Image (cartoon, rainbow over all chains, first blue to last red; front, top):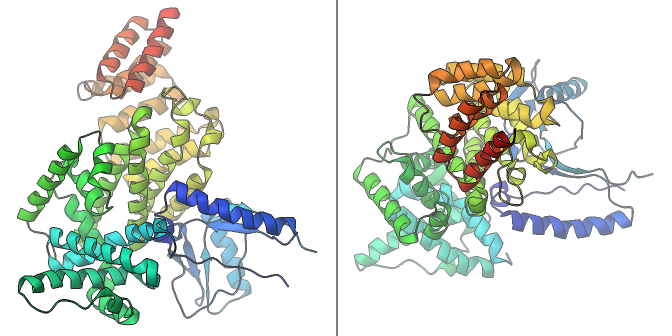
Length: 124
Length: 413
């Protein structure tokens, strides 16, 4: 079974870390990642850019609504995610619109640029 | 919570909203600051033992508010507040109370706090230290170091700024849309100034002053979090990120200035650039261009060029032309002339420079650019004069050294 481990933290606090504190955390996490990687158990790892860089596509209308900022509702749960190479925000929004057309109805897609991405192993 | 570093980060992150809420409550900056300090002291005692509360900001507002009321009560020889061991068990109650005093006003609280620091009566030399002290919570020692001033001089400057604000009216009513837009613009300008204080430092000072750049970016992101749909705040944040992304490439090992075209672009911070480009994309969707967005778009064209010779100068020229229309200024025209020199040649650029000389007669970069252009068209004697003027106007030793290098080159040719 593959598991996703999702990271939650107050971003204003993480954003207040000094570079040294941030580097130290990343170094400690790298040790854990290295161990998993040696065991062939580590898939993709991503660190998202701050929510200030986020845009949200809200479904539930004929033409989905584009909203600045992160997804903010609490009545919906995170059910999955994609990592897609996009030349611009417009291309990312277009991709999200394609997904919305394939799965119309309620829900939202939050579009967040990725700051750090490590592809990891591909599993059999 | 097991290390003091994280508690510090939590307190730093919670500071603007907490002090902003306490200021609204007490309507006095000193009382609000003291209340926040007191709440921090209690947090440092209680959090390592009991763990940090679920909502640290709500906890700090609640404890800060009560401790200040407590002072008033003690002065009136009345009942003191219960000990904080009791308080920290009240997690949910605190949240409810804090939400009542805080609620949907929190955006205006933070904006007000930032806004009173850029009070029109305060000169920029006082605005920036005041904002760094009150909003960012930097110590007077840190601020003094960043401004290369003595601690006592800086203490005085901040005290003077505070008393100036204290005498005036702090606007506590909820702002209307026009006032809010005005406040936002004033605050954005102040954040930009804070950044420039850090950015304009020479290499010898940049270690002491670059925290100002980090702080400006943090404040800009904070502003964008509370006003997520403002394209100019997106532009400002992107601009600061793009400039700061080049920090590691701007100075040589000997402290000399390395111009944009000669920088090792592999040293640019790609994560910051990625964030800025995403932000510009967001801003563009609003189709409401403004000075910060245009400046960010110009910086983005530099960031997108893998090599200096790949830079899209034609587009940069067009963007500067747009900026000239929105925000006419001789400095903008000077910058445009640099792009024009690349697109149409140095002679055209020199022609643009001429009418600016009177207004930029005290501006280092004007004479640096002019000397460079005159060199290119072979007017060596005039170039030398311009470079000499530039040296006499240099702001840092590295700037002067850079121009001297051009003079030496002229002497050799």
